[in-house]
Image 1 (spheres, rainbow, N blue to C red):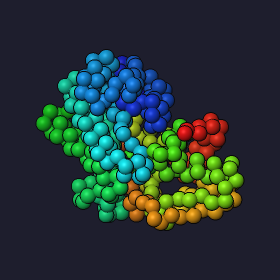
Image 2: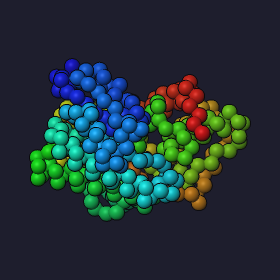
Image 3: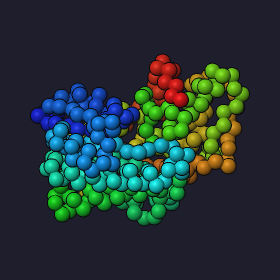
Amino acid sequence: MSSYWENKNVSITGGKGFLGRHLIKLLTKKKPKKISVVDHKDYDLVDHNAVIRMYKDQKPDIVFHLAATVGGIGVNQKNPGKFFYENAIMNLQVIHNAYLNNINKIISIGTVSVYPKNSPIPFLESNIWNGYPEETNAPYGIAKRIMHTHSLSYRKQYDFNSIMLILTNLYGPNDNFKKDTSHVIAALIRRFYEAKKNKEKIVTVWGNGDSTRDFCYIEDIAKGITLAAENYNESEPINLASGSEIKIKEIANIIKKQINYDGEIVWDESMPAGPNRRNVSIELARQKINFNPVISLEDGIKKTIDWYVDSKKFDK
């Protein structure tokens, strides 16, 4: 058991979300003095006064900043202003007030959307600034780039221990399965499951299926975040990912097979599919924090499908 967490108060923004729940489960085993959840209904982090009150109420030593306004391609395209403003202002206020309150360390969660549209493969942390992000979620990605700049500048000027982790596409139990805001794997699981249940002969998927993504199981990511909290205190962000890419059509066929759906997949190329490739290097994470994801994609998808079916999470 790491002594790092002994007598430490930990606050987790977005602690009731998908990643937050898994992180809390893991941190509980490490036995910090206290874990406090920063819930949106109690602390709207877009409101500066709420951020000030959160730090006053919870008095954290360590802050995990997970909270974000997020969603899939469709909702990103409908709400570019909202996604930019809410994420940018949230990140600025949470980090700035962490500094003002002399917090020991803040671990902020970034996104693979920070990378340029035509970033060389694999994505390396040193390439973040070499171009504009992919247009479908650029406002969200730019807001996270601002968070990175904030972290860097406060470390340089104030020696404030702020780090940023760049997360790939996450999936797993407790994921968001809502129709309008879910991401790739959760959305496809729901679509195939409901098509089978309703005896539908066709499942339509956006794009042509040739785009690639790096998917990493949620428990592996949560472990990586705690490793970084314990062991990493440098300016350069770190990628947390599986380290391999897979085509969306392969993902669709894995889910189709595991759900035993016998209909047809139709690709709608008139709809946006996001960036062509996402292949994320995890060499820096391996070197700096000994990060090694262990859950295979097929095993992780099976665990996610089992959870979805058993819990009957049919969000409207």
